[in-house]
Image 1 (cartoon, helix red, strand yellow):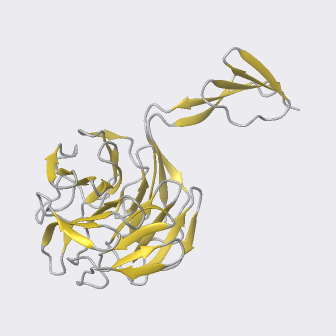
Image 2 (cartoon, helix red, strand yellow):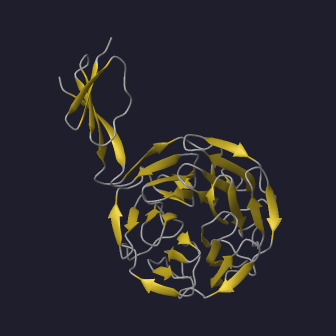
Image 3 (cartoon, helix red, strand yellow):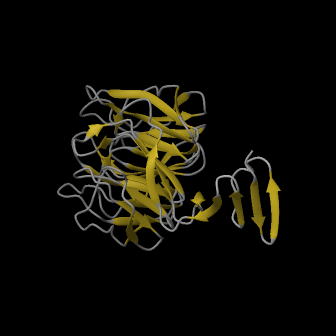
Length: 335
């Protein structure tokens, strides 16, 4: 039988069975295997492969946290047909749940968990775009009030379940780029102040009173422009690190701590970290990815699906981010 000794401060305790994972300040010593087990804090964020989704797709919506989220609709990997399928993430696996009422891709999603979210806008069939909004209560989708302006390829972010979301920029059916922003209050959409730069393929992070809109395509080139929303107006702040810009990124976080992962063109693995003032390049995603979904924060996040790798294949693969300063368990061989 293995014997474990644990230290916490100046105390030493002996255990006849595995005491589990230590916390900061504790060290477990396995006297049989001569190994130490400690909890440490990561010095830099990193990506790792995560459980795959059930359906390959691109241009999807997403909502929720790293332990409770949704990936919503999109276009399939075969014919490119629009999907209604929705998958729920519980922190360890993906499960198919009730479908959207309207199949679409390049839509927006907002919410804080896998039981409370909204999905809005997108493209139901080329070249049309949609103004439809659907609300999720954990078991079914219900159509609610439409956006004022139908659009696709928009940035999206939100906050409280059902009652707070932003629809940022995007494009119309025949190609005009929008600077328009709309705010959802749980009942209806209201037009608020425009972005300074009209664009589509942009990403968003934050809540309805404090948000970021970053990257995208301005009609002639991809851009690195970042704008900050304070609840009443947009202000240009520091650009992303690549002057050539990117679109179709997976974005998560807040106005003081956000991640931008992947993007195009072409599919890139670049990850940038926003600290409230500027962007810094950090650990790459294991492969290039664009047009997928992202949930979580700079502490813990998941991205999934989209076009991945050098062939831009539409994928089921997902990746988990563990941020700098996050606790991890280390086992050290003392032999």
